[in-house]
Image (cartoon, rainbow, N blue to C red):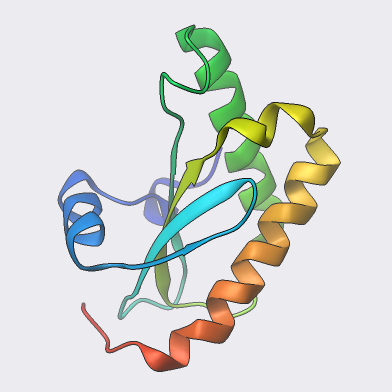
Length: 119
């Protein structure tokens, strides 16, 4: 699990869904915005369409938070990232999920220069 300071608040999550830029790959869909912090903040969303049981959704969420924790501080600190999981994720091992997540964050970081800052 990541620190509370690195998690996105409910208010910020709603703002991120409304105003965030979108990026996706085969396994994840991401909404992101710049923030005025010196660290990245994350949120992981696993839909009931992916896993019906809450224990399975929570297990996947914990795995992804752990992968994010090991990647922290990340390539470009200062953005909020909401990660939604796609259905193909169950085909991956933990190391593959971690690699895909790292690649995704690097791709998002390369797009950050195009966005305005939103507190």
